Length: 140
Image 1 (tube, rainbow, N blue to C red):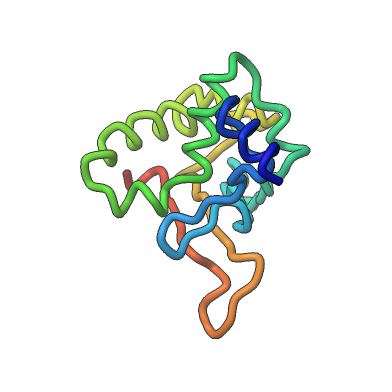
Image 2 (cartoon, rainbow, N blue to C red):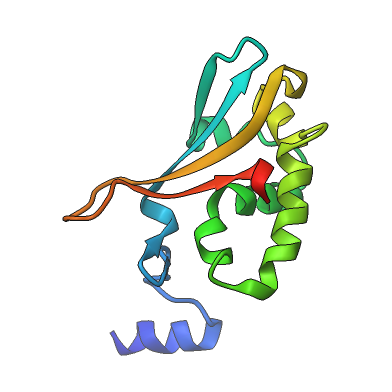
């Protein structure tokens, strides 16, 4: 055990890295993310962002991480006022107009009518609501 501790200290590596992180009472790792929109015929569509849909996001690592932040971090950002202007700008770019995030996920932005919503759902809850939060892009 001591040898493992010395090796970890020398290499700055941990045999048990911190993988899961909570931000207050919000857990990004256990939340489900749904993107919701209406098409031009007012038909409602819902796309769950999971590992299969997330892997469609194209480009460099930095680009993918910024788009991931748009989907995942609204509940953190809304509690951090100095981050809101930057988040709004990135969110509008990703999910409105030419909507490159939509394109990456296989959604034709020209078929979207009205505002896009990102819903944050708890995978489980004890006495609280299942829906954690809603980000409505058109209201940013």
